[in-house]
Structures are given as structure tokens and as C-alpha cells.
Length: 109
Length: 109
Picture 1 (cartoon, rainbow over the protein chains, first blue to last red):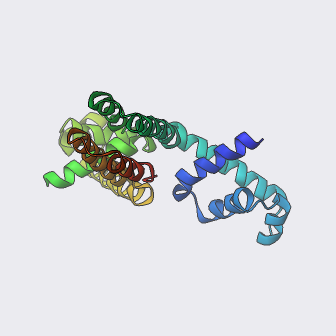
Picture 2: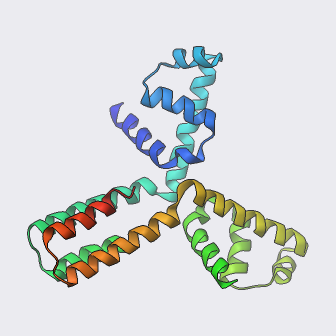
Picture 3: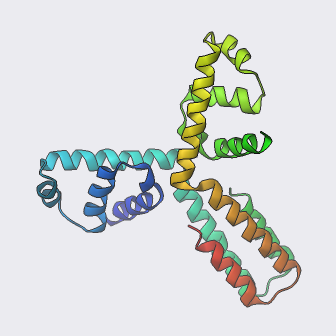
């Protein structure tokens, strides 16, 4: 499940400010510090099931925010275009080609 | 109040997906279609005060989202850097200067 973990980490980067402090704490301990559900439950003196439910609900919220705002999707598209632009500069492409790529980035929003 | 109206319009562009359908409708009628509070109240068969309260609450929510996510702020900074980059391309600046500006855009978020 590495791919899913990577995606949740990226979504957490973009949307953590919209979560409650408790949601943020559980997510950080589980995904960033790699604690087990049992260890988090012990630390907060709640059941393992309560931690699990909270984390699953938070993951759904992150996906709902992404469906609405597409911050991760737009970020990835923008970074690809910026990488392309770097390449074009390195290859000394003409002004028109550079300006076309810049224009595409400007229109992303 | 033109400046405030412009800002609310921009924030609405970025965060409208996070609002309820009713909030979106009131905001669009008031800010985009320029209807009066009374006209919106009549159309929805509610009091003028109810429309006013809803719109004020929505404006606060938009500012709270911006405080948390800074989508408008980052957008404006990015567009300034992209404009600078266009200028640099037009002036045929060297590769290092172009790559420095691209690097600043990549690191924005």
C-alpha cells in the first residue's frame, strides 16, 4: 500500500489546515511518525477502534477536499510544466516556445 | 467598497466548491449578478435579514479558508513571478536568471 500512503501524505500536506487538531495529531502520528493504531490509542487513552475510525474518516475528508479543490492535481500538473520549462531553457529553445509553456502555467490558476 | 467586492469575488473563485449550494447561490446573485438583498429575499421567499446574515457568514468563511490555505495569496505571488519570467524571456536574460525565477515558482507550494 505504499502508493496509497504516499497519496495520503501528499493530500495531508495540502489540506492539513482544514482538519481539527485531533485529526491532525492522529494523522501525523500514524503517517509521518509511523506509530501503530495501538500505540496511538494508548497515548490518547482511547480504543484502537476509535483511532482507526478517526483516521479513516480523515482520509475520506482529504479525498473530498481534493475532489473539490484539486490542489494536489494542479500542483502536479504545474510542476511537470515547470520541469518542461527548465528543460526548454537548458536546450536554449526560442522565445515563443518558452512563452507558450509559461502561458500554460499562468492559465492553470 | 470596490476593493472589498473584488477581493470577495476572487475568494469566491477559489473556494466556492467548499460552500453549500445555498451559500453559492446567494453569493452569485449578490456579487456576480448584482442583485439587491431585497431581490434575493423575494426570489427565495425569505427575509432580507436572513439573506444578509447568510452572505456575511459566507464572507467570513471565505476569509477563514484563505487564512488557512492562502490560495489567493499564493496565486498572486505565482502570477507576479510568471510575469517577471515573461519579461526576462523577452529581454533574453541568461539561463541562470531564468532558472532562478523558475526555481522560485517551483518552491511556492
